[in-house]
Image (tube, helix red, strand yellow):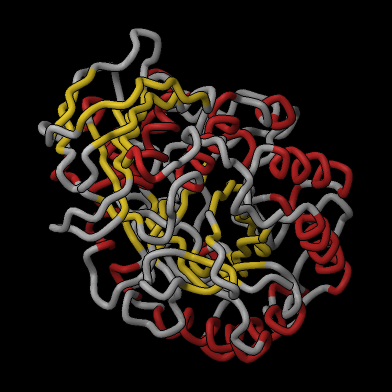
Length: 446
């Protein structure tokens, strides 16, 4: 079983042998609850083919997961008791986890949705119905830890809820998981919208890395601010956006506001990654709930989930991953001082490089332009006298060479008129790097 650990500098995830692990997640919350084996295989094979590395799925699902049986007529618990799991239900979970691992995917497994642990500070569509206590949370955690001890997975506690007031329950569940699996798997926490696990749990020793949920409202356009805040916290821990704006999701949950598209999906990804995230999660509104008629859709889902598998935003995620893995990865840092006018929201320029802030030790600089606009980049962090320049197309994963120039300390450019978003890549010409994105699978776990 490939083991994942936090990198030595505390910023990234790696395999135990030191190779970078790029967390490219997909939200499949209802995977265990609503699919057949054939459907699960269809979904997982599709995600593996697109370069995803982690699948976020929930054992005790949100959508009536305790009272509505899975596709084989099984409920997860007897009498809603976390200490009385139904073997038949978990046998299906076993099969899906095994199949995911066969495809080279890690399962980012939520033991339960937050609905079954704590009352939300808002009125969700389904009322919260807590079933967990400190005592049974530890027992349940130990059961899962033992059962999936040898699986390729990451534990994700939480589930769209704050931890305030129920920290002891989550702590007990984390303790049980570690007792069961020997502490072999990383752990994080999925919070509710526009918040981070760090708000309540940053200092918890079991929390391996932070997860934010930038969410599905227009305010979610500034996930770079949330990532930046967690990146600056002590002690240092990796962070990623575990639930950004979903493709084909109504903006602010209202169809009259329009629907998030592939451009907005890419913006969220590059903003977060270039702000210092150790990976990113894609989501599609129809896929997380595996919606198909005649099932009642949640929050205006409109596309059959099998058709939604191939929406353009899902393809685009592999290009972000390929770009970052084509350059030194574990020494990458965010550096907004590089852009003359970083801007905000759709006018944002998000910049990253390798090396150390304040030192001229970079071998590359990348600047993501959210929309067509000019930018001037400070190139002084690259000591070399010669620079090699590229435009990288985040829609097609194609690099357009701009040639080699003298390093005069800055470079001004405007992207091609086709677009709308682009990444400017500036390399130390002596580094000999391939075209951006060219080593797409060089550091992969496949």
